[in-house]
Image (cartoon, rainbow, N blue to C red; front, side, top):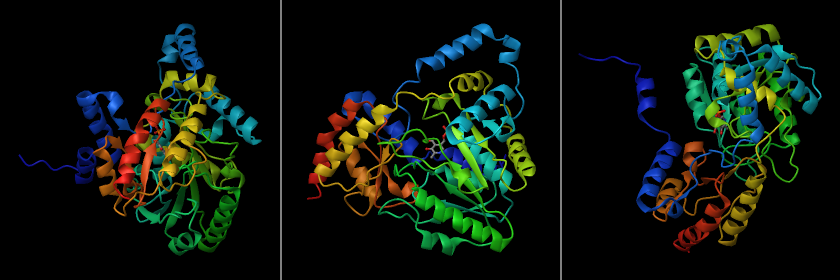
Length: 397
Ligand code: PLP
């Protein structure tokens, strides 16, 4: 019997992402030659455990809360008390005055982003994405029936190529996605970059007579180095939707917790929040995991011990630069994005594989000629990998 499916979905379900492909390869290789001999830098799975307070909060909720309440549905947008705790925390940190009504809890940043794109976009709308970008943005934007428009990378500093950006703007652009601290470059947008971006968006929104929304994807907000500050975007541009996640800062990627913050200052706030909630409903996302709503509410001002990422960055950067690799110094996250030693980053990553170095070609992030190294790994893996990076570089001398 012929089976007629949604071909796009069937294709997405069949092809693994390059990152996942490499990660699976690493697991197989480790079983063959031992995990210590595989230098797997493929995936962004935090290497430090969640703080003890996470398990304590989970145990307390399990012991002390009424189980019917704990395991029951919460409001579709998340428990009101938990959202209140989030509002208090954001207000303390950024001198804002949000309430529970500004937050919509989601299963991670992935669901938060999908709620934004589905809530904002109609067929034919465009969403601007700056390279290098998290590859799933394209999937999420296309899933919402919109068209991704990619702005090539500023490979000097990984800020924004404003000339290319301005050329890409048109009345069809409904939203612009930013991700700072950035996966894969580790760059943090400066205040100057944000001010310029906000100025352009204000001017173009006025010209087109409709808001262009800024979707700020911030799972790495807390993972910054040497006192780097991450500007809080709603302060610079009123039509910002903040997508947050506890996957990286609290090392909880498997628990699927995040939120969309809809600021009151945004145009048509009530309709905008309703559209985010409606998108959650339409996608079947309602009610982020109940136990972990409570846990994240209890641990709202905490992070895992993320200091190891800066140490890893320092060792890796010094080592690679000493061998002649060129890399912009990351200001945050746990990724580095050096230039590949040949123009073809896919061929370079393939060659690295022969030395059991698993690094991801930059083409998948919309930025060929580079490779992503995820250094959220034990420090000793970075130290042990140095000879492999060195041998690889010698092949190009
Ligand atoms: N956005 C970026 C930039 C990411 O790197 C990731 C995950 O790696 C996500 C979103 C998705 O995060 P979550 O686990 O919260 O869905």
